[in-house]
Image 1 (tube, rainbow, N blue to C red):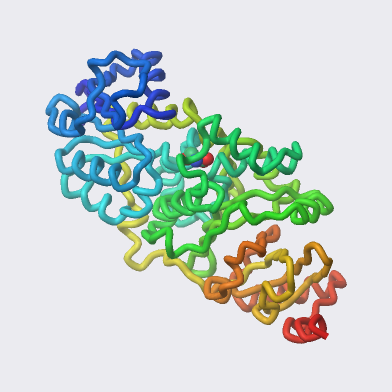
Image 2: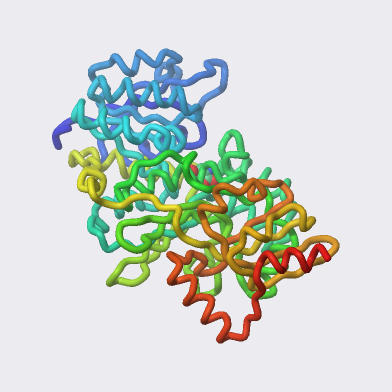
Length: 432
Ligand code: HSE
């Protein structure tokens, strides 16, 4: 798209974000971008825009040669896929916020952009208003990025804040997240960690040039966090946050997962509350950098779409340089260890022998817990991890990159006076 081109937009979806972008564009005349048509599903629903803008026929947008930008803001992932791929084939620039669709089809979407020489931008798909993708693409276009750890889902962070800080009931907090327009239409996508793992999949491409499927990444949400876990965190002055992590291990190996995590007061994520998101980027020389902003909601998300529209003015597109030079580059790896806190109702819920070592173990008639180190590969294979009665939380600095690091950790714990026991023996002791 040349600099002189008029931006004529075909918008799909007029929900929370769609309406937001319509309103935001009215207030940004300098962008000289006009919405020509809005494709909606339900023609009977009352809308706050002139009727002549509305259509239920997607082809009225997709076949209109004057429309050079398609903004896709619908919920349904397979409909979004059809719209986005058709628009790219028709050589229209596309903006999308559909993280599930993008994460699932990354490889194909890259190919289509190349084949038809058109951009697909999706800053709004990850962390709402935070410009994380463009930062990873442009500023961190090198191999110095050691890790990315972020709160990438606004709804779950909102719910955790209300539950833990304000002692609100889970149901009320979820209803509020929905009423505020933060949650997905199906909020289980938020609370079970699916939304966060979709976002992590996109982050992996822009951080390390890795294309994978969200299905291959271990993820859990906040729905199994127990009141006793919150008490445990409070006793240490920690917060519980749902984080998406990608961490460079030795050589070109990368660890990646979405799990609840304890964060200490020293962590930049500690003070991220409500629908805010925050991402800590760890680089080799600059140490830590932190991006913070609203991760969900009408205007924060619309602001990211607006920024993408504006970027199209100067023909911006993702170059995916890390992916293209990744022939011998980064790969996902399961060969590392995690230090976990696991709470459960009954000892039979978990397999203590799966742990490499156990640092702490408390049994209680209501809720017991273990703190220990476990191989990530073993965790992926184990069935107890997904039980509704089991809650798993990563300990601070809980990624242990290899056996050598595990031995070092063991030694430092011993020096600190921790008397851990061999897991199998512990299991037997308990049964006795
Ligand atoms: N449901 C998402 C969230 C919306 O809560 O973060 C923004 O992607």
